[in-house]
Picture 1: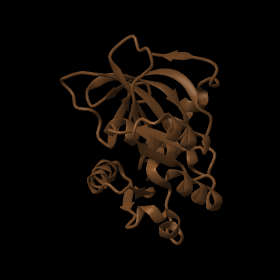
Picture 2: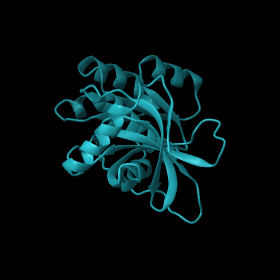
Picture 3: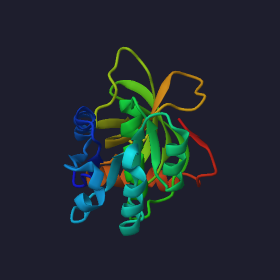
Picture 4: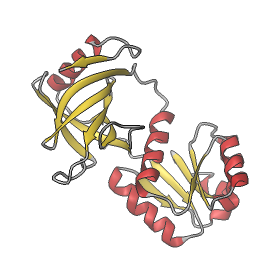
Length: 229
C-alpha cells in the first residue's frame, strides 16, 4: 500500500509493545516503540507519526505536548479501569481503552482514527443495499462512497474472515472490486449474526473504478435508503 500510517507506541510494557506491533503490522501499519516512553515529547520531536498509543500513567503531559505541536494527531490511551484517567483522556480528545485490550477493538479504533484524521475531505457517504459476494459468502454493501464501502458479512464457520485485502464481487456491475480492509465492527442490534467491514478501493483498474463510481453517483443522497437487488 502507498500509505503506511506510522504508529508511535509509548508503553513501559515490553510484551504489550510487541503485541501491538504484531497486531498492526499485518494490517498495513508501521508501529515503532519509543525507547523512553516517559519522555514522549522529546522522543517525537523530530519523528513523523500518524497516531500515538500511550500508557495512561503519563498520558496527560504527553497528550498536552503532542496537541500543542500537532492538534489533529489521533491518540489512543491504554490503562486500567479508572474513571478519572478516562475522563482526562476523553477531555483532551483521546480514546481510552481499558486493559486487557481486545485485538479487534484496538485495530478497529486505530483504523478509524487514522481514516478520520486524513487531511483530504472524502466524498459523500450514501446508504444502500447492494448484493455482493465476498470469498464465496453472499453479503451486502450497506454504505458506499467513491472511495470505498461498508460491508455486512454474515458470520459462518465455513468461511474465514476477509484478509487485509480482498475481492468483492458485485453482480449488478459485472465486476470484482479489490478492497483494502480499514476496520471491523459488530453491527448494533443486528437481526442476524454478521460483522461490519469498512474498506477502501485498492489498486483497481480504471474500468472497474469507473463502474463503481457510476453506481455510487447514481444512488440518492445519504438520507435515503435504497435497496438494490
